[in-house]
Length: 526
Image (tube, rainbow, N blue to C red; front, top):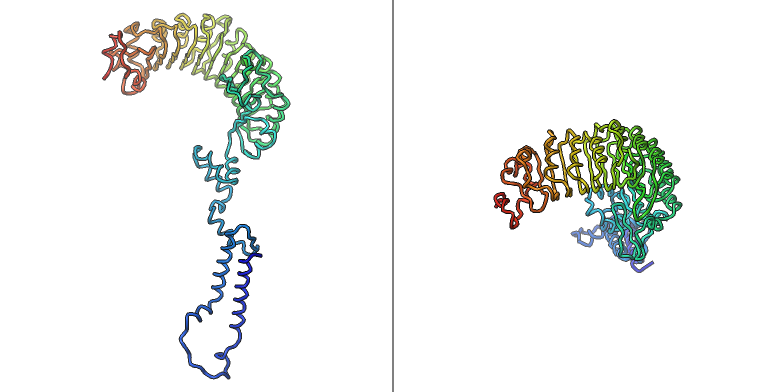
């Protein structure tokens, strides 16, 4: 042992020797000894009588000096003062993991993310608080490190981690669905992106590892794989509610029948420039019969027909939202929407066609529960498609049309079949004129709100008195058909500017009137 420890033992031996001497009878206790005169007590006598307290003080001082030197070992019997001294340095050691987790969970995300830098214990605790994660490298999952680092995950995205991308490349190939780094030799031809996707067996092994380690998984997104990997997820994760399948096919959808509690499903079949996969009536029918609790369904680049849409409507009776993006549906699919009795929202996005041959009118029935219709980046030049679409969506209360090519006055006139519209939003509809807009909205007796943005052929000079009177009855009005537009001053009071709809005009009302637009000068406020 070191010098300090030997000195502490010598102090203890000295105290024992003094105790043995004090126990020997003295002349004051011996009756045969002569009587001596009492003297006043001294400080040294009082000090020596309390030798036990002095011993504790000296020993504590010696142990404290030992604890400051980490290279000197100490006996096990003296560890309590060391632990107490260490707790004074890190008070969080007095808290259990459960209490500290409760404290860390109350912090905002901006402060919580940097807590793992404090120490290794906080690093492990911080990993237990993470619930959502996007995996960038599938080897992190296959090695088991992901589960050790984040054991309580319930939302996982494996799409980026299943792609072989050049990390050092500065070229990023991105679209609305997925983004990957590519080399300079990459050519955006159909199917070339399939070479960057990992093998199905590797992805299935990753899915099985994740499913066994995270049985409480609620949301999962992955690309590729087979029905075996999807089956392993469905068997282990009974609470799975949201699923996103990239490069989906009919064979992959065979394993989706086991996902009985699935509520939100997104399928990506064919994506131009990345991968090509086929989802037909067979896969959609399997989906409809297996996932009967679906609430939201999104089909991207999928094929199908009237039969598959009808099967979805009859089997998935809780379906409330349907999204079709770049669909490859056969003619006549619109008639199948009438079987979706509880459908409230229909989104049609980035479609080159709607339904060129919808069939006779007797096959078209409106979805009575429909409330919202979204048309975005679609080609609406076909009259049969436009007429069939607005007949099927005749019960819609809100219509949103954005950046749709071919929406001329004749096509928009079919919107008069929607008899209970309360809100209309038009943005980027450059071929629609003021007369075409007026002919429709004057027939909508329940219209309360209107939004017109970036529609260059809608001119204020063509506003009729009837349309001006209708504007004065609206609750909310956003009128910006082009950058030069300002509402006439005669409509200021009618649209309740400065009250409910004033916030919509604040930006355009402060714009300077451009030279040559003299008829708007009186409408500008100072």
